[in-house]
Image 1 (cartoon, rainbow, N blue to C red):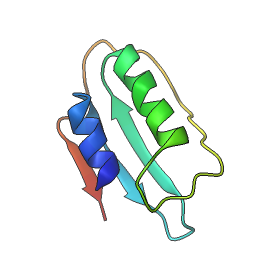
Image 2 (cartoon, rainbow, N blue to C red):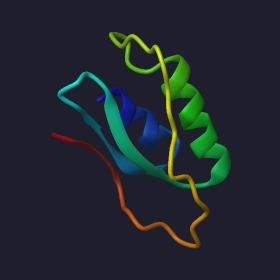
Image 3 (cartoon, one colour):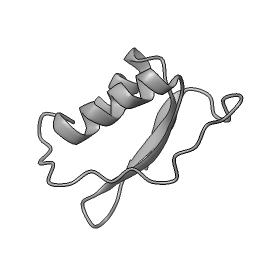
Image 4 (cartoon, rainbow, N blue to C red):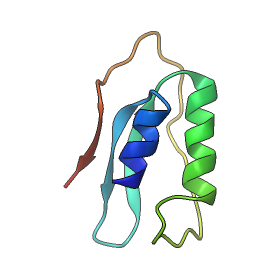
Length: 75
């Protein structure tokens, strides 16, 4: 919920999902500077009840246009 809110505030699109192993996975798209701000937020702050020990961002690439719309929490 907090990640979805942060993504929307930054004007990003994507999704996020909690895993059974206690991690979070997702995809974020938008302007590079805002994606970087989201990465900092995810690796340093996160939701109030989160305990962040490691942040790994993979499969990063530049895209010509957004492939997603909205920012959702998946269950």
